[in-house]
Image (cartoon, rainbow, N blue to C red):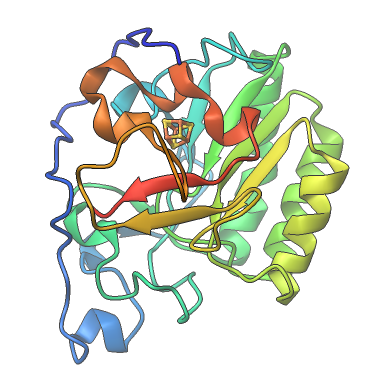
Length: 250
Ligand code: SF4
């Protein structure tokens, strides 16, 4: 696994201790009303917003891919509102790591977002004709079948678009069914893993902060355990491999 260091321009350090999630009470307003803990950080998108942020602002993501078939491509992230866009079955409904992300802008899901996204993806595709990567979603999830369909349309229209990320939707749900089809039909450009499912293209989350490398459940995400030496850009396991990835609760 490469340990190439990718420069980050992040304004705030992200070294949040592993194994100590912020857990909200079951009757907390954000839990009950299915919202972020930071409603002031929700933004209704308009055409002047830049929906995609460069991965350079995140230590864990990194600015570019440096290994594997997507090497050389810049990475961008999209952040939606946690809980509001997620299935209530999520194991991390109360201890979502968004509970610790005070500063992140969450773009409001819905028709306005869907009107703006295609143009911004096209702009990135023009700027990076050799390819670019979108990490979906730093927070939030695929919130409707129409939203997944939109990504299919954008994949078809933009051969430069490459996507990786995670979903807690079940693969037999209306959204998951389509996500699975895209994983098959665009397997070289669309790599969405199944959160908390384990197995092929799955992820699991453990509370044990001592795990490293390859363990029974899968490969432990090195960006969580190797400090600044590894980012998604220098690792690439999530899209270059189908083996389950293990995350440590944080
Ligand atoms: S395992 Fe996945 S999430 Fe972890 S650093 Fe590698 S690509 Fe990123």
